[in-house]
Length: 402
Image 1: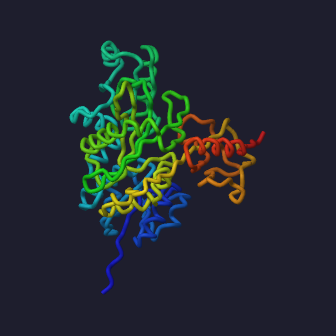
Image 2 (image 1 turned 90 degrees about the vertical axis):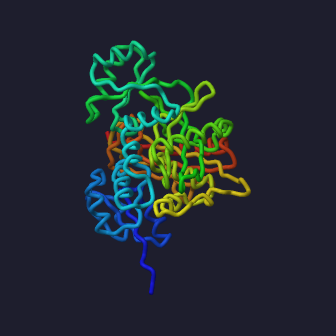
Image 3 (image 1 turned 180 degrees about the vertical axis):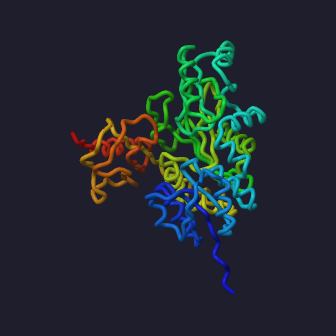
């Protein structure tokens, strides 16, 4: 009798989930894509589709029960993380459960867990009013940062260097949140860096420190990453200890971990962490560096398969690489995209792609959601990657309708 085909549910059907679906099908899994209706390209890569809101855990759970799935996952976005946790815990599947998902989706839950477990992070408190804010500012030194607890990325976040700016930042955060409070936090001033990691059956499968390329903003945000990050390798032990502490505090297991961190005065601190693979091309970064298909590792972890051996490279021949999001330099309607054709790209260019086309309306960059494309390059060193990056960027030009 033939063994029945295992089933994986992928939450989301945008372009970011397509490599995940391809990897699952290569591994012989039946793929169900879950998303609201829309022109999402991922639908074409799934074996079947469920139209549901991935931000509604009970709706997703009902679909998972009906489909009798064996695993559930998502990557590069937070929208489905809470539903993923509910499905994993209620159906006893591999991966992060309800608390882990709540912590990944809500900064207040996350920060409180860090405090209870002694995880190094910026000092913080919750403020419910301007009066509470003024009182808290008497004991917290500037600069500070105010955050909406239930928003991801750069949404609902502002740095403040004085009381007037803090008042405005509070109003900005409260306008973005559904909570009746926001987070007032010490603004750590040091070297911001990223970490991508994975827990597999209670153990760290790997930890990869990422150098950040930041765009000035309030606050600054990553528009690219590079590996290896030499400074990160020098403090690898401290970073690994931090990742283990975060995983224990937030109950992360059998999942990718994406962390924003800070290095200050010889110590490492976690700013935020989530239970899925990072965006900003990080999934590709990891795969290129280790010479593996990282999407397959994410799928296997969701199916309860130990992935630790995938990251063991006996020769230690890791591949330096660099990723960069592309943005428009002004708002407008694009009339022409000038860029090197794929057949004419220099050696070492892994990907140059656009998520806009002629006729698309674009915004001047304010955060990562304004991306218009991406560039990924590899080389013998980070310096060689930088040279190739400059060469390709110099050949990309947008023309706009007048």
